[in-house]
Image (cartoon, rainbow, N blue to C red):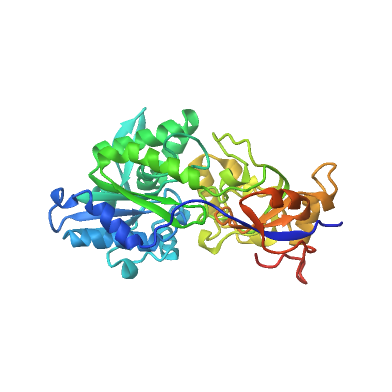
Length: 414
């Protein structure tokens, strides 16, 4: 089979970037005048999720330091639904991957899967992490971004953190089931509002990133401002979000997927393969090949079911207990389906290009990316060259050259 020649492209995005993150967090937190709402010595539970948020260790440490400056006693709680294998130790390890430890943060990390029921919405019990519920105050720290499964004015952010994050595995399972019965865009905000009413939320810190996976904005919000503040940050995050620059592809090659990249392993907004309640009209990807899973995922390859083919090396790394628990909790078994697995990248690509219809393989529109978070550089096939040259945000890094495989028949590192 003749493969098309490939070349590297750089994609230019618009969007701000924070240069001094601790200073920005101090400024926005101090603007809330929290000293008027607390007493020295009181405890504050600080949420920490499982997503690969840029600078999350620096952000979390800055929040902890500012709370200490108020004379408070902060502690960090893993807030990530069923991730980390739905175990306390597994969730602690997820945070360790991000540099969030007791030593690096200068405060305790209290990990537990125990919850207490604090209310009810639409007949659904609302849960809260037991350690968090026992604190004098709660600080909700979350990235605001487009969700992979649904669309709404509020998607992934503070409200989802209060629902799925604080609810742990037990809450996440209830809310996902309710989301299938109603819809996620309704259930997650309703659960979050119940937490706002019942729990002792001190403030929230919304984080928005630019397309280069850099911290673009941080905004501290009082509980009364959560809803409008999150809606505004989501509009910004969507405007800055990285996307593929092409609408139609015969083959998309994704070097790595993982829970630290997206809750669904690969961001559906990027690959154009929505799960559950999302509707996307672009990009249209005929065949999707995912090559590996990140070490940070610790074998949870949920979302691999969106791919048409994968490698034996990815499959051999799957922790089926963790992946199945994640799929069961979310109520999306499709995410845990394992596609055709091949011994080498060359074989997978040959099979993929043999299933693209009447388009000859050498004329296939192919894009290769590192993962769905890193889209500033892409490898692109020569049939897309004219579109690249005409695109105002794209520039060539290399000239078209034959696709290269190593002696084992695999692609070199991106």
